[in-house]
Image (cartoon, rainbow, N blue to C red; front, side):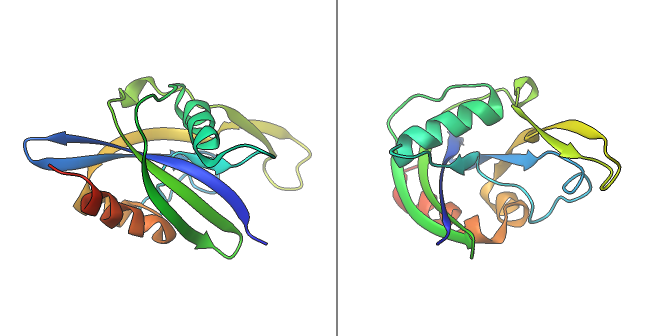
Length: 153
């Protein structure tokens, strides 16, 4: 059964256009990847944790900012055979240069016996929808269209 995750697609409207906040995964595997590698801040739901509570917790862990506001449900997407994501849109602002992500530990280089720490998210950026469609992982692309269908700009 696929892992159940939840996340927040933060957006802002300026002069009739929409921009969305995406995060780039940290660590050596993603270091040189760009197109098709960005994501909404998201993560696995804990036992007995609502999707919204998990989305808020994960957003805070990955950006260092606890989001607030009224969520707009975007439904569920299947990112891969191993991951289902329940997503929410949230209008907001975030200064991307100030994100502070939690870290994970990984043996790197492989089989070296050395454990290193890497940020779960190494950067965040605001993208117009057209650019976001190129940057976001394929399984999350439907969220961008759902956002545009549900908001009034």
